[in-house]
Image 1: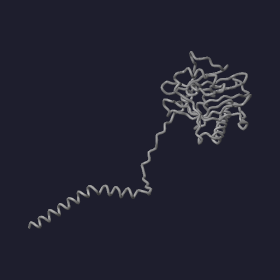
Image 2: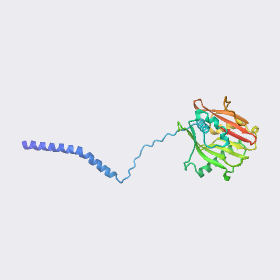
Image 3: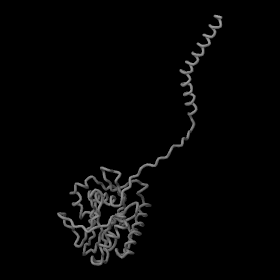
Image 4: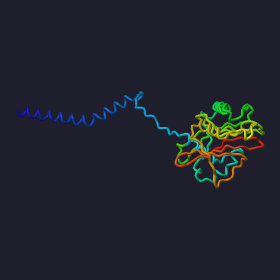
Length: 269
C-alpha cells in the first residue's frame, strides 16, 4: 500500500516539475524558434489604409495668403512690384508671411516651366476672347522672360500656402507685351498681371475685368473700395476693389494704368 502511495506522490511531483519547467523554458524556446523562422524571410501584412489629411485653402483665403506674402517680399523685384513694396513692409499684419522660391527639381525644371508658360498663354487668351485684354505676342524663345516657381506661405501656419508661377520680363526694352504675371500653379488661373499694349485706359473696362477675373479664380464678388490714410497710388488711372476674406480680413485689388507706356495691370498688393 505504501509503495503505491509513494509512486503516486512521485508521479504527481514529476507532473508538477514538468509543468513548472514548461512554464519557465517553453516561452523562451518558442520565441527563439519564431525568431529563427523570420530571419531571411519577407512577411507582408495588410493594414487598414488611412488617407492623410490635406489642408485645402478656399479661393479667397489663397488670395489673402498670396497678397500678404507679396507685400512682405524682400527679393529683387520688377518696377511693377517695387512701386508698392513700402506699403507692405509697413503692415505688421503681413510680417509673418514669406514668398519663397521652390527648388525641388521634380516641380521646377525646364518641362514644368514650359508648361506654365503655355498655360499662362491659354488663360490670357480667355481674357482676350472676352475683349478685356488686348492680344499680345509672347516671344518666350528669345530668353527675355524668367519663369520661376514660388510658394507664398503663412510662417505661423505653414499649412496655409499657395504655389504660384511668376513669369517676368527681363529684357532691355519692352514696348508691347507681357510685363509680369503671377499664376496659380495648380488651377492655372491668373492672380496678377501687367501688360503693355496699344489700348488706352478709356478702352479698358475695369469693372467687367475685375468681375471676370474674380469669377475665373472662384473668388467672392469684388466690391468698390476706397482707402483712407493709405499711401497714394502711383498709377495715373486706377480703381480699387475689395475681396472679403475670413475673420473680417479683405484683400484689395487694384486695376490701373500708366499712360505714356500704356501699361495696364491687375495688382493684389
